[in-house]
Amino acid sequence: MDQLPLKTNKQILLVTRVNLLHDLILANAGYSVITVRSIAEARRAWQPGRYALVLISALDTTREAEEFCEELKSIYPPQSVALLTGWNTFLPKDSCPDETISREEGPAMFVSRVKEMLAKPSS
Image (cartoon, helix red, strand yellow):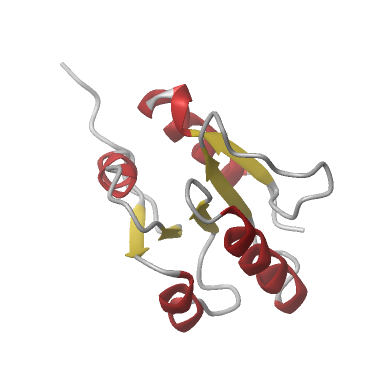
């Protein structure tokens, strides 16, 4: 028998223009996910301390994703931010996110990486 997902009250703000099923994968793993389709929408939805994790797709808008990450960190430094990347996403060494998660790692590793990030104490 499969294990039921662990329900958690930790909200994740997922910023993605393309539906790659990451919201469904996270919801099935027991996370509360708010999905927005643009950085502009994310700015309206985000509030300091509301989300345990902001996960931004950098698959087609790397620079915009980095800029939003930097904006969040300047307003609220403890905010955990991860960028969802692809095999061809380039990020400089000094880029903003706490973590990068490769889409190529697959759903199980994706959930595992998110779980690891949420287990870390906030700064």
